[in-house]
Image 1: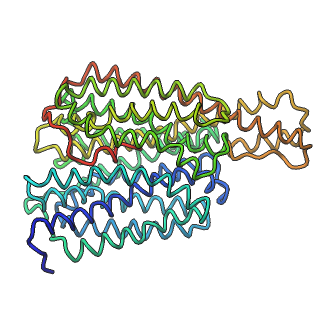
Image 2: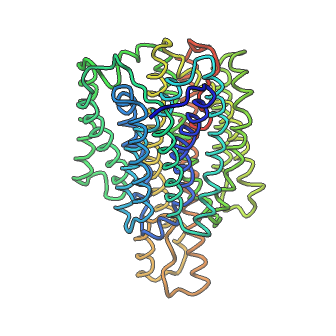
Length: 522
């Protein structure tokens, strides 16, 4: 294979590969959220099933993300990137034809493996093949395209879900992934780190899989089966043991996946704690707001996607000026302001019930939330990649990305438990005064696992059916309100950590030139 030597040509093909390959992953994630209520109905999933659809992908991707970057450096960045593309495309095809919830969850796990291989490769290819004096231009173009991809996800996913099928969301990845594969294999020169060596940290990987997997199982299944269930207790114990083993392995490893010594740097530790806390809260909005809009407010999938566009648009519009402002006044004031504004957004969402008018209910919260995101994402990324010395900026970015995903994964599990418990209690409260037959009441309470997808039992009068339906919707809103208050508390804790641990300016005070804005959205 011979590659054209023109810098402009190389930059073009690298950009195509990065945008199509990495963009495929972000499009898939943002589009999938609006399809979850329909997937729940079609595959007869309960709340834990929805949590597993999201969290199994994050679990696999988080654990293997840093390994994917190391494999690319060692065996060839294009080769590993293309392997990730093929795995992700094949898993997307499998997800699209899934005939059961279990099959879809398995395909999502396989997507996580593909994503862990291809996501680090996109950045590594740009870094290896684009000249330093032109790299900012390429990354800037990539950064401006990433929010557009994120923006199109909810709209496209909602339209496909309403007018075609939710399965089409996964089929979209086939042409995108195959185009990126063909361009990379034919036109992008291979590169690797000739000095890369040493054993890979597979014991660390195994310990982290066991630790996070066990903890995730206990968090998701505990509310449904009870925390005293032997299987839940065993998973919790296994998870805690796995995390403890991970720390021991990383301390003793000569080539650790996560060098724990990095956390001696105060700003690095602080910014990753801020990321963990704040992005955990954000996930409560991006995951469960979609369910609220469709199951409680009765929006269509497309309307639910459209309803969430204002916050993404504001993030996109604010990213560039906020990046410049970060250079002038430092990251901490902007981050603090952005997180506090997001807290106001949580409080506004917490005050909503069953709103008939989107323009006077959810839209104001979306605007406030978008401003908060716009002020926070770019400065946070600047501090994250600049908290360590320059030669470790890639590792710093990878760790922060992994922390972001862990926050999302744990939040989806914990908030799901909060929603389930609040929904179950609310259902009993809101139906207490209804003259329901005992059999119908038992059937309704048995559906609590399905949260907002529950339906009034058959055979009731039209008036009683309407009252039960209203109780189901109100019970979901009760749980959503509790999640918003918890998210607000997490973000306030993030501000406290920010002010105590994070320095005024990052070690490298330039605004980030990576596509941070697009990645910053869960």
